Amino acid sequence: MASDLTRRTLLAAGAALALPARAQPSDRIPVGVIGAGNIGSTIGGLWVKAGHPVLFASRHPEELAGLVAGLGPLARAGSVAEALAFGEAVLIAVPYRAYPEIGREHAAALKGKIVLDAGNATKARDGDLAAEAEAAGIGAVSAKYLPGARLVRVFNAANYRVFQKNAHREGARMAVPLAGDDPGAVAVAEGLVRDAGFDPVVVGPLDAARRFAMGSPGFGLDVTAPEARKAFGLAP
Ligand SMILES: NC(=O)c1ccc[n+]([C@@H]2O[C@H](COP(=O)([O-])OP(=O)(O)OC[C@H]3O[C@@H](n4cnc5c(N)ncnc54)[C@H](OP(=O)(O)O)[C@@H]3O)[C@@H](O)[C@H]2O)c1
Image 1 (cartoon, protein in one colour):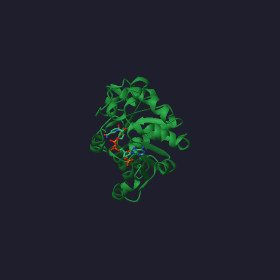
Image 2 (tube, rainbow, N blue to C red; image 1 turned 30 degrees about the horizontal axis):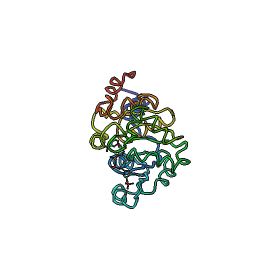
Image 3 (tube, protein in one colour; image 1 turned 90 degrees about the vertical axis):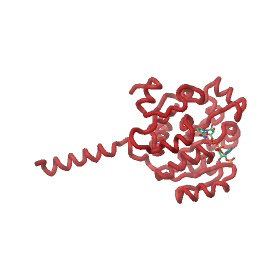
Image 4 (spheres, helix red, strand yellow; image 1 turned 45 degrees about the vertical axis):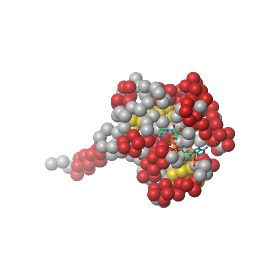
């Protein structure tokens, strides 16, 4: 019969197996979400459900009353400036054409801020910015218009309905690719990806965001993390 000590050791090992470190929620951090449409409300809502306080922002925060009321006391609405002041990390989920203006108007607040950048540039909606992103790489273009931010490209590579359907799914989680130059910002983003119910896969530095930009082979992959690492040619 196992001694008490052995039994305790086994129980502790069992508990550790049941809840591996990577499945534990990251520390709760205040998050700003700039743009509370399809993608912002989906991902921000998942963070609220994970216990993070979230301030949702748009140009018309009064229109976000229903969204935040539905999410409960951890959710609130405000201006872009308030989201930047509130968030230790900020998700930007606005049409890409708004980036230059947001970058100009909030230059000081963006400096040193961890920014999760979900925007995609499309020709129909964003005009010349789409061509610029195609030529220079979307990571470089985001960095140009949001200078000084600790940028991580993430949550751009799937439709919001795919995120809604797959968050915290049974079995192997859906992979979410991300790319950034700042290791601390990437680590925070990885934690927030996990808390939203997905497995983060770091594809590389910010420039590697090209590999899962809209129109690239890495865009729209609904795969597990091992499958994503294989698809991106990363070490297993
Ligand atoms: N839809 C998707 O499935 C999906 C998936 C991945 C990535 N993305 C990317 O995410 C971004 C947002 O897409 P979406 O579909 O979520 O758009 P959306 O549903 O149209 O929502 C856009 C949000 O941004 C706000 N907004 C627009 N201009 C703004 C500005 N200058 N300052 C502050 N807030 C502003 C809008 O509110 P107000 O107009 O009231 O300001 C709205 O809350 C795009 O770049 C898109 O390419 C979308």
